[in-house]
Image 1 (cartoon, rainbow, N blue to C red):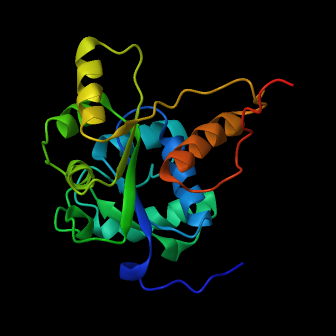
Image 2: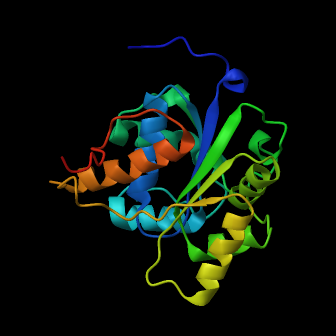
Image 3: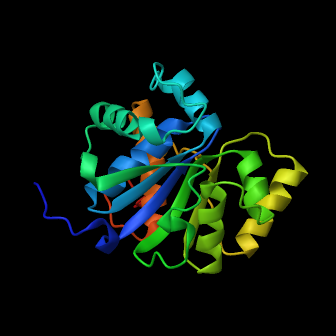
Length: 220
């Protein structure tokens, strides 16, 4: 059912960032779920993230995503819209180096939170150290300083002590560390079931009501 959306500056929104770690499909699943729940989404994909997406999902293979992406933003959005069947006007794609974006400031009051999925260990490290070298890192810093929800979904295994220290530092600063670890009590029958479980867990942590995965009901 089509909705009459408010202007972009008035819409309650979330930021979804995809970095250069395996599992980009989780990020797109969350993008679609938030849009389906009537939120506007600011999507950021790192340069390394594009490389992973091209390899894992065979998307953007005909686009040169190594440089400035301003002139490619419409083509990037069109490919996402066509592959995941979502509305073009319910998300904005932002270049990771667009540090002048409104979401780089705490003044963007309509932004409720941010999820980085998947999140590379390099991104974890830079965010934990307060290094705002790109829009993903700066927006994360804004979430922490404004005491808004920041969910980080690290995609690495095993973790070394540096990884763990950085994630503990982020937890102490208010972030939620939510690794994309599947459950099997729901007896998943497909990869989509596994992806939906993680997406549902993220929505739960954002406070977004959903029924896209089977919850544990306990034993009789």
